Amino acid sequence: MKRAVVLLALTALAAVVEAKLPPPTPEQVAAAEARHAAEEAQLKEQKAALERAQDRVVERYHREHRASAAGSQRVSDENMPKNARELDGQGTPQGGRRPSAESHSAPAK
Image (cartoon, rainbow, N blue to C red; front, side, top):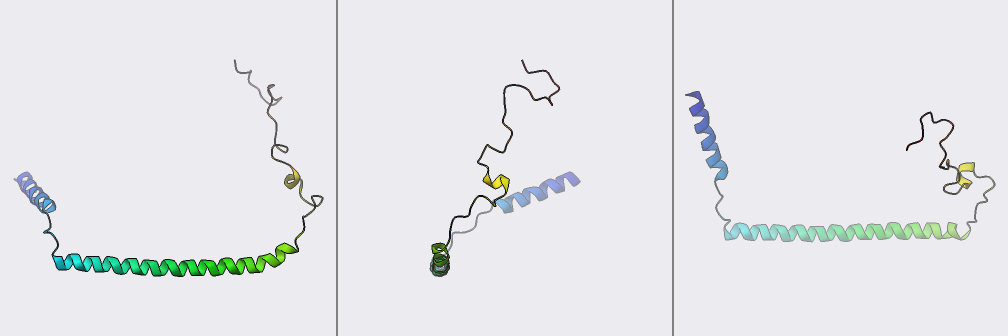
């Protein structure tokens, strides 16, 4: 009996889940379109405001850094740390065909 009640409840729940909503009325469609248009207009305004703010930041950055770039000179390599002076591949161990003295296994065949 308990199983039948649970099965009946699940069947009723499935019918509710499968139910379709009626199509929207023309007023609802018009309201949704107006809401969508308002969201698009607000998005365009926000995008334009963001672009203006980014342009101001870029202009300020260029204005402040052009003056300092004109007087900059190349830094000598003499006072640099050793690892900053090394080119890629110079400061790392170089692999060879011979196994290292630290390897304790036989060479792979």
